[in-house]
Amino acid sequence: MPLSTPEPGFLDSLAAESDQVFFSFSIPEQRLTYLNPAFERVWQQTRQSVASSPEALLKAVHPEDQAHVREIFQDLLQGKIIPDVEFRIRLRGGTEKWVCVWPRILEDHSAVVGLASDITDQKRYNDTLKKFSDKKNSILNILSHDLAGPLGMIHSLSQMLGDGKEEDAREIIGIIEKSSRQGMQLIQDFIKQEFLESSEVKLIKRRVDLAQAIRECMEEYRQTQGMTGKNFRFHASPEKVYLEVDDTKLMQVVNNLLSNALKFTPDGGQITVSLEEREDSVLVTVADTGVGIPEKYHHTLFDKFTRARRPGIKGEPSVGLGMSIIRTIVEWHGGSIRFESEENKGTTFFIELPKG
Image 1 (spheres, rainbow, N blue to C red):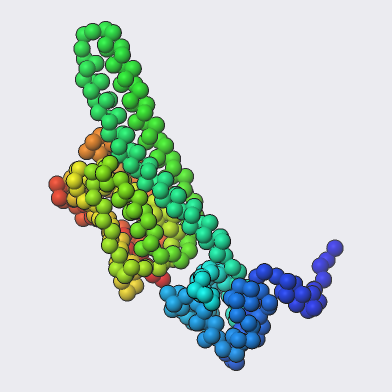
Image 2 (image 1 turned 180 degrees about the vertical axis):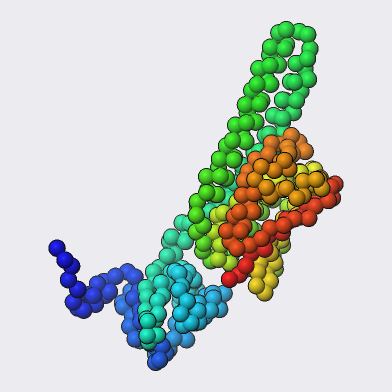
């Protein structure tokens, strides 16, 4: 049965009852020509108060997001296709909400029309999931560092003692050797699978405070300083750095670099992550005071089947994403990664991500 075009009254009724905000902004008149009732529930302002004053609407946008919203609007006027835009608004009383706006410009450039939704609960849920995901990754890295080391030692000692002549002792030691090897392999396979499963999923970018994401990750590592014997530091300039990224995958990259730093930095050493906002890019550095990367591995470190993989200084197995996958994730973001390293002095990785 063919579908007929709905009557205008039906569409008005649908918009009036919707939880989404429907809007129309006249470009020649520079004013809002339509807002449905949902606007008042989301923005907690009357439609009349912003109808003739777009600036009043912009003032409700969080100060840190206003420049971003203005930039998106200018891109829209230039005919660029804009994906969903997420930003915060401030309500009376100081509370905040997250909204997602889907804007489109009409072909004759007479108006901008679109939808807006309150995504505050969704953002909080996603942020909570990400926080626990970061905690899981840091725990996995610490697990590989603290558990794989002793298992590696048991493995080595059992091999040495296995050369003895006592048949019973050699049989028991053989069991120890086999069990420790299986335990090490289990840790390696488990951590590798955790990283690789999510690294194969498509990028899902969103605008995030990258400084806050890394700060939360580093806090998990700082809490283990007494256990790992390493000192962790984080610097961000400025304090908040917003960027459109797939923060889950990008934080996996940071976590994996931190895991490598843990393995190759002696007790008492320092691991530092820095974040610097530049004019057209953001620079993330992960530096350690560890044993460094031998010169012979420098040119092949990012290769898929590189020989640069090696156990940590306490016998930790090579686990995680692998440098080739790290480079792939960074390049998916349009960025680049490089490193500087000197044996017995440490290693620094530089990740540069474009703002646009």
